[in-house]
Length: 145
Figure 1 (cartoon, rainbow, N blue to C red):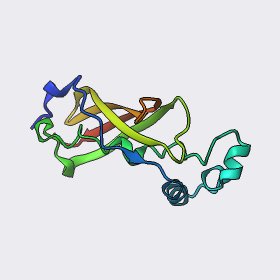
Figure 2 (cartoon, one colour; figure 1 turned 90 degrees about the vertical axis):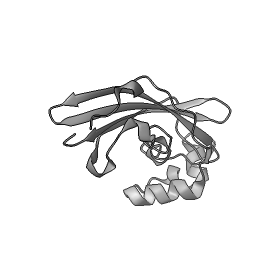
Figure 3 (spheres, rainbow, N blue to C red; figure 1 turned 180 degrees about the vertical axis):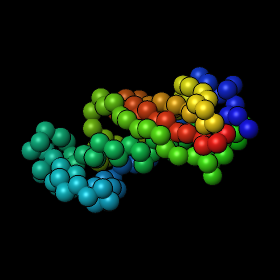
Figure 4 (cartoon, helix red, strand yellow; figure 1 turned 120 degrees about the vertical axis):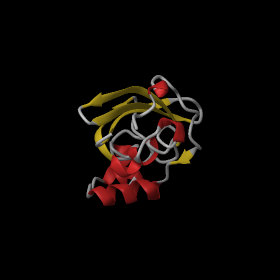
């Protein structure tokens, strides 16, 4: 079954607020094997010009796919056949400890490529105060659709 093209251009409501903590940042940095002190030590982060520890550049993946876009049953995605095609981030500023963020996702494209379906999603990651922190650009592929 093809993915529902009526979802192109649909923006989903913001996700529940996610509090970015020093612990979560350190755990993520450990998981990706990045020993940078700006991810762990508030003094090192301040010395680098940040108000607190910052998250590694790929940290927003933790929250950017947590919204409602992909889980809407009307979209018609078969998750057993999904692979992650591409991911990139555009930053206004780093994610930092103490941020409370929400994600608002928009499906920007759905198209067939051979026997596959490609879905592009743009997610704005904002503080609960409305400040844009970064945008996430995701491509997922449903194989053999």
